[in-house]
Image (cartoon, rainbow over all chains, first blue to last red; front, side):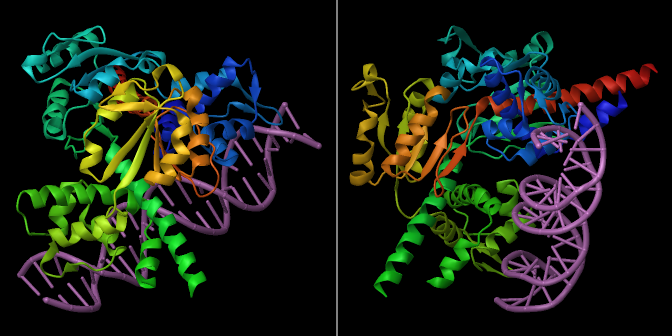
Length: 226
Length: 226
DNA sequence: AGTTGTGAACACGTTCACAGCC
DNA sequence: GGCTGTGAACGTGTTCACAACT
């Protein structure tokens, strides 16, 4: 047990971030009836190099067969276990604006082992409103959701002005994992993990790259002119 | 000019990814009437260390004053230029499901220099439907959007089954930057930049961390028991 | 005195090259 | 023969320590 625990503790963050991609590829392969897969094939399906895939998998343990490859079902089960997806994870979405409503209507959560147990908003005017078949509930319901439903993950879809407050209330209620869609930096105590997803940031990074190709094209043109 | 181009080319990817955060923090400071800021203060606002902030900014040039700090407006202008945000970037959103509609209704694009020039869907039944004040247009409009509107960035919000096709059509029309929300690995030719944003992946990474704290708590308990 | 800018040291992540095994 | 698993080499990214400057 200490061996497995040590191994698990030791998975590098960068590897963990790729495991969901491998799991997705394996699930697709299993759906097509594929029984066994080589690191080269699986790596292609997941968009990484086969060396990196094997290095990542080596952190989980030794589940391949040399000269043959990996058993699809087995490897999917091992990754599922490593990610902690053998149980359902209750999720609450905070902030019922456009984005929050879209997330509430998204069917992908349940498919992958996450259960949306509540939709919350701090605005009393929205309370009780029906969103995707669920009522909007007040922030004061949070402690009860943690105690009774085992709420573990909070999704923040508020405007950036309300994000820190939403986060503080999630943390105060006992939530340790937060997915933040608001363009704001959240301060949290040690032991709480925040992941940020920001649309504008992504577009700005793409703008940087777009500008690079525009600049390169302009340089080529002026060289031709010169 | 070659000096600026060389400098610009040399910005590490990790730094580029943080520049939008600095810009956001600077914009907030400017809005509060702040004229000058130290690396320590700005770093706190952006959620990074002051050393990292200074190292990142050093890739852009030397815009601070030793013993004093940075001029807020000036630095914001420099980062804006480095990211290529001195021009507007036309964006098209492909896929008018829940997520696509939420993105279409999102007001944050325009605020940050991106203009949504078209909403597209491959399903003929949606054509012409009004979404957030704009008509849904067919994929065949793409070449014209690139030629006439300068469309540069494509946002893919289709189901994963349609993502590669949507991407292929964007690339064929001349789009070089793609923001992909579909849980799929996109194959693109050299010179095309794809950034992926996947909800399920993020939640699964959080599940991994949530499981770690659960496992640690269990270990502590059994130690106490033992 | 105070703060920036940066070379050097360090840590982390990826790729290479090949030993180990079926 | 073929494919996995992994130590070593390499490269990128972060932090340290301090020189440079106002």
